[in-house]
Image (tube, rainbow, N blue to C red):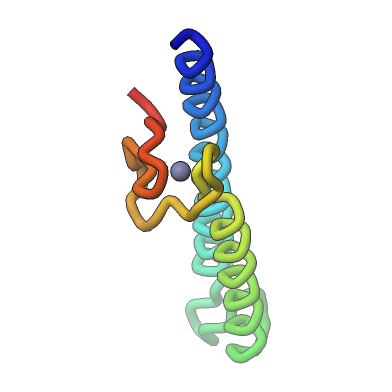
Length: 101
Ligand SMILES: [Zn+2]
């Protein structure tokens, strides 16, 4: 039993890292959105002096990047299956491993 307990705490540690990275990815994306909002000229409505289509394209690029990073990161440390939409699931819905207390 000792072995599985040790493994369980390893999965919890690994999940804590996955969750921290996930937070960083979306906080980073949020910061970029905020920068675009703050960088928007009130009179012209242009972000950083860019044409709307260029600004939209850049934001879309960051959204795709954040989604890809998030998709690759947000996985169960035990079975590597996606963790789903919940922000902080207690258990993996595939292998039932406990992710945190
Ligand atoms: Zn799993």
